Image (cartoon, rainbow, N blue to C red; front, top):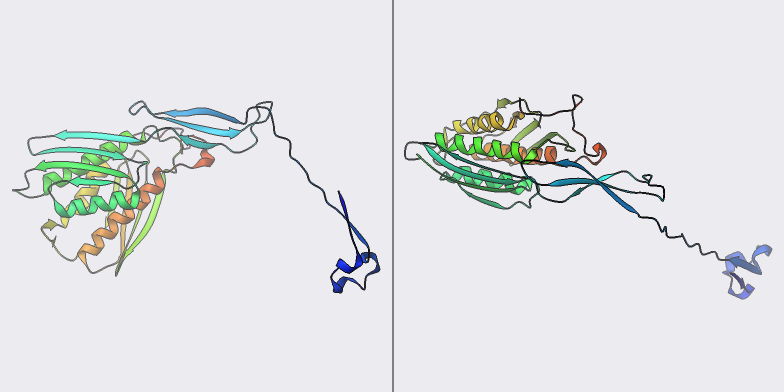
Length: 275
């Protein structure tokens, strides 16, 4: 289509140019043809036998079936782990959804621990459900330990074969004067590096020695390498809460999908398993 603009309709600044005194403007409209071949193709790359859940990749394909874009994961279900642990000392039930929205429903019998588990849910965007009864009339040690053991086992179950995940996570969380860094690897090899300097023996009724024991227990059953470092902090509550927040964010990073991996296991060995 062509349009002719009379000289009187041209902006005055263009009038000195003779070539523009009587101009014809060509307007082109291009229509991109719509392919008639199927655009969407999916292929399953992971099935967690402990939790019936398919993770698929998808890509745009041309008429010959050739991919025209990078693949990306399609999530057809949540990664959920459940664990029930019953001993003569405790009765613990845990359910965790790695693909949740941050729902927390925790009643461990240890109020401060419940508060920390709420941080795990909120900042990791995991759905965390913990119910426990135990011999807290003696002290909180057994319940604290068994809750952590059950959470670690539920994580192990929810992760499945670990295909397509980032595997590594690290995060520094400040809370007022406290600053704590957490770095972790979902390697299948349990190890805890712990360097917190908590100045008081208790926060409320919670024995602060149980913080290290909680993470050691979780590491043992989940097969996680976990390093915790304190950069600053003088308030015991702030130090511990910053630790759980940093752990939540690092774990969220590690469990999320790396689309460039296209569903492969993030290991040069080709396997990540609990050693």
